[in-house]
Amino acid sequence: MSRDKTLKPKDTLIRHRNVLTRAERIEKMKETGTWTDDRSPMGLPKTAHRKAAVGGKAKKKKAAEESEGEAQKS
Image (tube, rainbow, N blue to C red; front, side, top):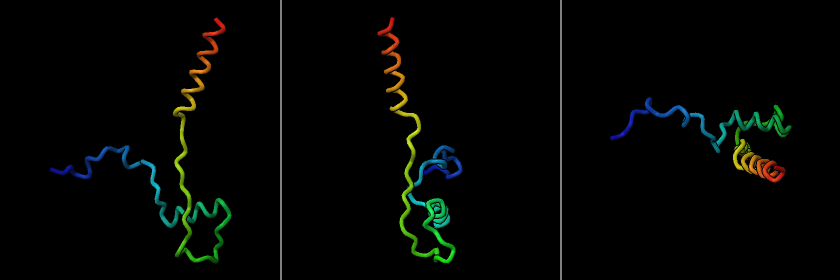
């Protein structure tokens, strides 16, 4: 039996999307300076949309190195 769509977890609605809408692509192009107002919104080029890594392994590695440095000083 399937679940009703109103019972979806809320965090699935905020996930990273690879496909941008036309308006989002135009905004990205305005930020980079590749958009002009006389240009047609049809047939836009692909616009890279990368998910930024937040925290993760880099912070854990740095914290581990700091704790090792403190342990060696003692």
